[in-house]
Image 1 (cartoon, rainbow, N blue to C red):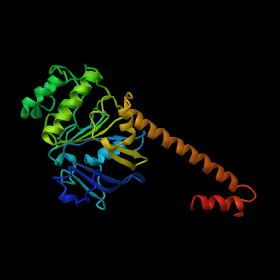
Image 2 (cartoon, one colour):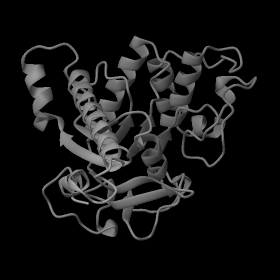
Image 3 (cartoon, rainbow, N blue to C red):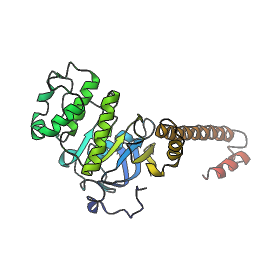
Image 4 (cartoon, rainbow, N blue to C red):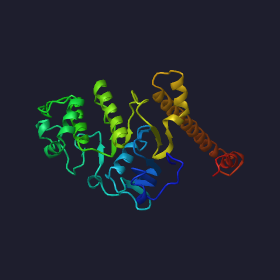
Length: 303
């Protein structure tokens, strides 16, 4: 499934039209398959939310796109026209939710809980982009003299975001990065990211469970379930959201996604209960011999 009706081009032809291009991506973590035939195209200016239950594969997908995991050669895959690891792709930024992970473009890890002032963290990067650094410091209300072992989680998160965004990006991957931010810092960041997409043609893929303020932020929604793409919609074509928005319902995106997830969980429960009934009936005196009960449910499930 694609955002667009245009025919999907080959990965090496999509660096301009599609900043992210994935076709038939399947990914195994050791012997467990965690992503199944993922298809995704993201163009300049687009901001796509990745939603789904815990364990749906959202973080894994972002880490694959960030070059944290190797991608099978059988799938078409490119970020900014490249299959290279993250630190080799100029213009790609990944903001994860772990303090010790790489947050910007360098291959080195940054220690966010050590006794070090903000101004000395990734100092070369800060010196290379002084105007953008100062703008982000003001935007996120950061004191460059903060020592990282003394600040709160919310302040530490702001520093992580600042360092991750200092170098201008074309593709930004975010995994629950706003979870520790207060309402003002979060909204200011979201507004800044809209500006980055609209003025510089960047695109953003954002996995989150927090939907406050995102109705006017996102352009597309990607729904994952058990490692599979269950739907990708532009927000203007998301009928449930449009109806709730028109009716003036509070947090229409949250309510639309919640309804989808509750419906699927209910269907899963019904399926599991039905399967259990089939197994119980198969153990009856007719079932094991392939009698009425066994044959009836055998045909019903198409097995």
